[in-house]
Length: 115
Image (cartoon, rainbow, N blue to C red; front, side, top):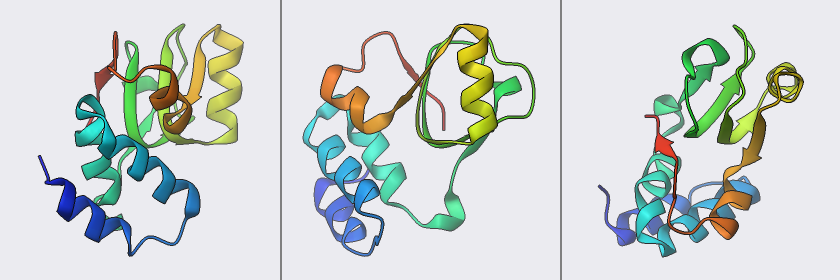
């Protein structure tokens, strides 16, 4: 796990204000610190998951893509493709932005981090 100092240094290079705010808030809470470390890292290490790869309630520090069928799960991610969001809602699941989830679930209860 990265130190808060390293996360802070890396987040200063980011230009997306929503990403910077998510990293800043995530590093404040011990349960979310690993997510902050992943989001602050290089773009070449970015994470993308297809719906077919998601089998339970998860946190994805990256983007969810629409390939495959959605199931009735809670998916927390930094970004969703439009089709992925539609499929999740149609299946009865929830698509939640990481920033919103940090504010409501500071302890990351009932969620598993996918890296």
